[in-house]
Length: 117
Length: 111
Image (cartoon, rainbow over all chains, first blue to last red; front, side):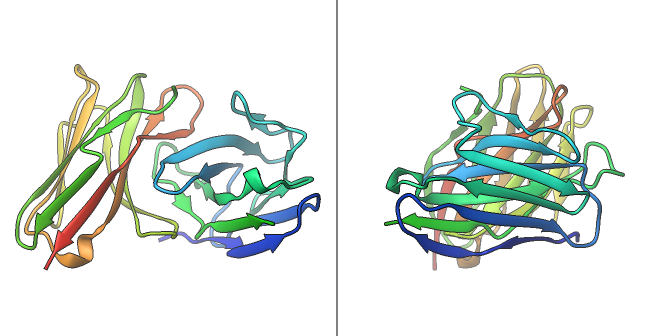
């Protein structure tokens, strides 16, 4: 199956710093990628839809200035958590769908566990 | 809430027994997908059922879809300890192209 690579898998940062998470589709092109956040024992909450070459679409309640999304190419989207605080500690997961195949499965990265101290 | 609902939230069974998980959703969908997640890991796609399908099989997995009731079920037959994981349904809405996840069922299969 298709592969989505997410990096880093784990990061610890100090309060006030910024952290960038990368999501790459390795063997297919993705005009759209999705960023989710997951708290322990909870489901995935969609944060934003990342659109190649245009602005991301954020879900209600997600601060766009805090969670910066850039989708510079058909295979790469990045999520930057700016001025991180301990409450931003969470598991962040990206997913991508093959642009050439409509209505098919999504492929997920392995996730990034962010801990803000 | 954008999320659908799943029940049960947690399910504990013995190896060899069947496990059934249910999912309800709110919007019109193109398809519904089931995913598995081992603790602290990414998601693995299990099966996709389209809105014009009523039942689908894949190995020990059986999925049903009732669009009139906006509900789906996932049956895992002859469960194994390795099936222990969290299972999520995700709806692929007609509008938006994004996957919205249910709350998940935490399955524990005891050897």
